Length: 123
Image (cartoon, rainbow, N blue to C red; front, side, top):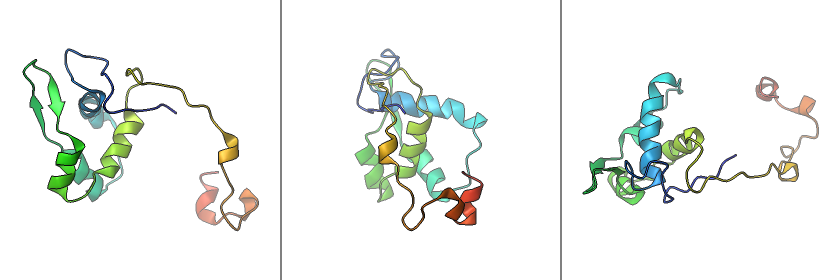
């Protein structure tokens, strides 16, 4: 797992003012190679942010609050996808230790064989 801080410094400081803007444009280049599920809300979230070019010629994605105001809701699905595909190496990149003690069995189940059939394909 990697930490993602949208306000941190981008890998390419000449092209972007922050990690969020960089992540959006990085993702736009990956999108043609990704097979995402059809999800109307995700699609709306992904096309909602606007961008501009600042006085230094960098591509700047608008603040999330501006997108939220226009949509009338938070673009949470796009945020989740962007963070999942964010390229490692931003100034705030950090490793997070796996902590098995934080994982619990679903309530009411004690063994994976007791899980409903939908879980069989996953486990």
